[in-house]
Length: 153
Image (cartoon, rainbow, N blue to C red; front, side, top):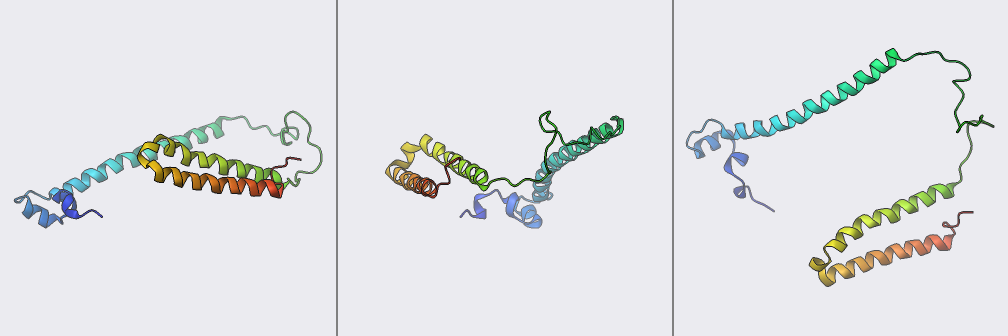
């Protein structure tokens, strides 16, 4: 927990208290806050300009593009092959589960790499914590393997 006393007085004192603390300086607190808001205003202006430019480009492209729809152009494109069957087919759940498991074990690398770079700082405590983390992941992998989730066919 940090105290307000650690910050410069113009950041936490009200405007009148800051004026009296600074020997009558004219609203130093308000000036500092407005500098901060001015920085955010610059970011907001550039963000709005980027959004406006994107919408403008999409609008110009929509107006200038040729529009000659034909039945052949309205057919769904499937890698150059004529579509066969209905539009809706049921996917197997194992593809989804396999993707979720991949993401899960890929995200754990996000936790392991920073730990590996600071292993000297964490010492034995960090080593034990990471061993517990990896043990839990191995348990999850073993559970998925025993349930047959990792079988592709």
